[in-house]
Image (tube, rainbow, N blue to C red; front, top):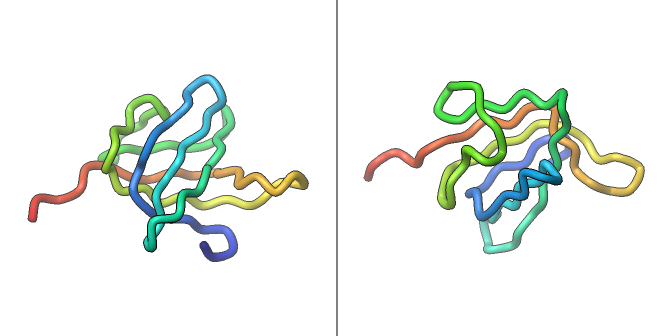
Length: 83
């Protein structure tokens, strides 16, 4: 990860906590947290954490809170293009 930005493939979500787990390059996982103010788009349409499916590409922009959790202010993603 880099400061303020995370990207990977969507693994799973927890809509009740607003959390998304993504798999980063190299196979490590990373949890992205969302709030009511997080702007979420899937395939360029307004979405929620529950709209994402395993394998979707995900990019999140945000920052760590005092507890070290990555809180996203923007999450973009969607279906992987056909190869």
